[in-house]
Image (cartoon, rainbow, N blue to C red; front, side, top):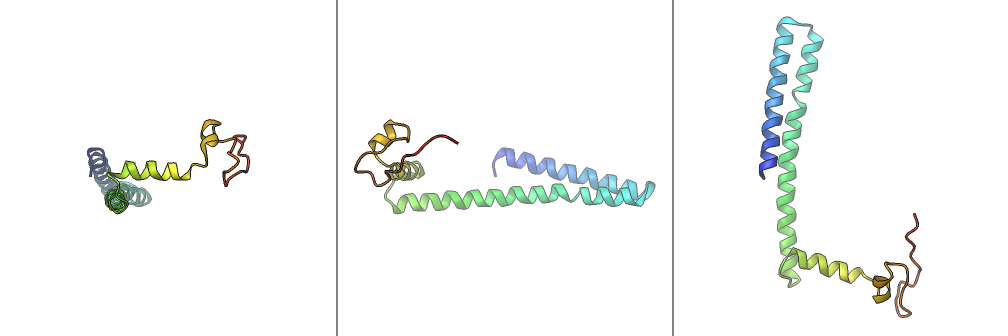
Length: 117
């Protein structure tokens, strides 16, 4: 978990604690509906903190899989895999030089591409 994720989790949990304390005070001294509202609101930051940890785990898995794919393809790193995929998706020389509007006569993607929306 990086520094910003940790900071967010600390802020989420401190906000949740504050809202839970307000819910207790409302339960003791205020209307019951306000206590229920603050009690429910105190759960939202807990869900956000859990989401941050899930995102952390997903990032770790993506990095691990990317490195595995790079090694399997014989590349030095993930950047090499990305560059290789982008170059493989390119049509032809004329497509590159005409900003994606024209194709060479030998290009399999001879359909004219337009940048008009």
